[in-house]
Amino acid sequence: MTTLNVLFLCTHNSARSILAEAMLNHMGQGTSGTHFKAFSAGSSPRENQQPNPLGLQVLKAAGIATDDLRSKNWDEFALPDAPHMDLVITVCDNAAGEVCPYWPGQPATAHWGYADPSAVEGSDEDRLQAFRNTMYLIQKRLQLLVDLPADKLQKAMLQHTAKELSKVHA
Image 1: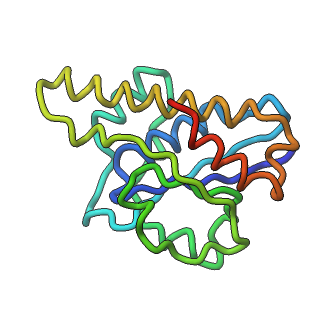
Image 2: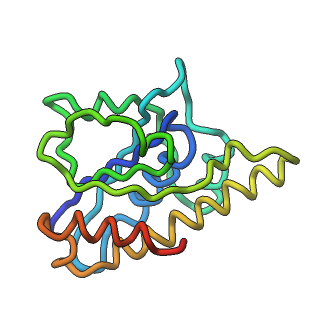
């Protein structure tokens, strides 16, 4: 069985990247015999940054584990002893425009943009619904990823495949 390590990046690593990490780890056994291991990080998490409580709430309500989730700086994944990444995906427009660190092994990269659910104002229910909507959109694209045949997940094809998935209207 092949394992693909996927790193999701966002600016603060508190909402979208955390949702993507938790969901891919939950869905992680692809139908092609590929296992996915997800991680997340931010380009500039705030001091003492924590995952957004509303994000954790919608993940828990969906039956997805949240115990090991934490906000972290992307520099953690550029260290020599960091896990090797096969795919790095930005999930917010700010992080997509930033200069990323050098990722050992030159992983495939893609940008899958999602609106920031933590920026939604309104009632508690409105804000919670924004997180549910974002989780659903991320899940749709992740399901396409985990369902890909093994040949589409080979290193030579992964760059093209990840970018093609960014065009899917989620």
